[in-house]
Amino acid sequence: MTNTQRCAWCLSDPLYVHYHDNEWGRVVCDDRQLFACLCLEGMQAGLSWITILKRRECYYQAFDDFDPAKIAQYDDDKVEKLMQNTSIIRHRAKILAIIDNAKAYLKVTQHQSFCKYLYTILNAHGDFPKDNHPNVLQDIPTKTPASVALAKQLKKDGFKFVGATTCYAFMQAVGMVNDHVMGCDYRTPRCR
Image (cartoon, rainbow, N blue to C red; front, top):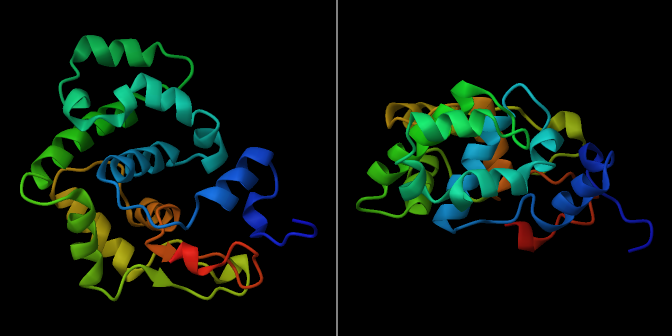
């Protein structure tokens, strides 16, 4: 596209642009992909998303393609190996959080899909996916009542590194909310 208009947050790096154009804001229904995205958003806490995005493939390799059943079995030796892996952020609490999240995931998906679990929480606070209409980046909130409720329930169910701001970033990433700004050429019905 010539003279393509995009959300301003993604313009600093070609990888960011590709992520914005091809992933961000598109509805994800695959349980394992939702689990991976939630874990990666947790890894971002205190960092920029580009830091995680540049290492995303390394995270998939290090964490068995985000297979919750495998991750839930990680022991102290595996944690120590992950702490030595220079291709990921070596933050012990965040690594342990992914293991806790896998265990929590297995519990909440015993009788329903992860996608259904998440949308049941969100739909108590409106209709999701939700198409917001931000005019500029500053119009986009960092958290909402729905992300607060999602964070509260996730924590109650044993998930870690899932605060309201992290949950809102997750909601944006997987298309639960469409926060492409008005005028962005990627703000299309496919993001709903």
